[in-house]
Length: 268
Ligand SMILES: *[C@@H]1O[C@H](CO)[C@@H](O)[C@H](O)[C@H]1NC(C)=O
Image 1 (spheres, rainbow, N blue to C red):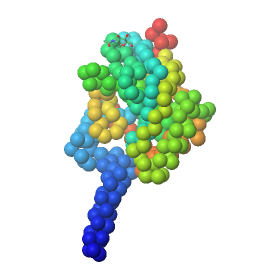
Image 2: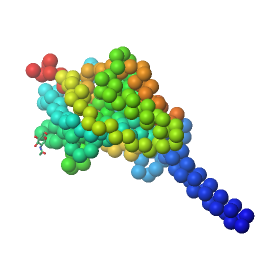
Image 3: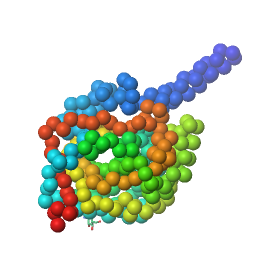
Image 4: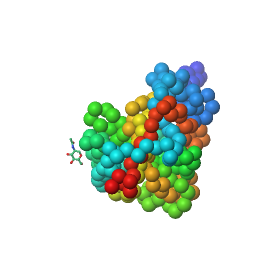
């Protein structure tokens, strides 16, 4: 009886500990041995993170960006969509159900899939690292990824993040209670707030900034820097574990890549 009890207790412990380990031991992070410098060797699927030649993020040097008159305004058509707030482990994001947005680049449609934040910013402009960066991730039918990036400097609160601030604190409470994979439905958000300020953007070909660091991602980094409050940056970090709170991948080598500039003041 005693041994049976001890066996079930032992079994219970192993099961609980394994679940615990699965959540607690990430395959990659932003610190130590599992940090960005080692992502490429942590898993064969991540090898592009170290061997790739088109990696992101980069430092965009304004006076080296080439004005490209063939670039067109960023056409984005985001509808009111039901979103789910998620703790991706690496970052906090919003997942969208169904088709609630499209980005058109060179006549090709890229469906809006999800958005997530990094802080501090991953991309830099003339060596300036900003307080935060939003990535709007889109996917074409043929599997090409296009990301629109918005940089935020510290200042007034961002109206879009304001709409989800209460939910972010729910997510942080769930995280501290151990529910790190919490999904919080937040209903319909007006995505029009994300559509402003596309008169100027930087375009280059890069990669995902988290493993597996998939390449040939079409980046459009908006030239207009928005503002975010200090409290909002803290709210975006709160649900993340310590080794993910600073979730900017270091700058990657340009390897001869060119950054193009679209500026409607010049083009029109
Ligand atoms: C691309 O998106 C636009 C805008 O939503 C839509 O009008 C058009 O039908 C789409 N084209 C294709 C091929 O899906």
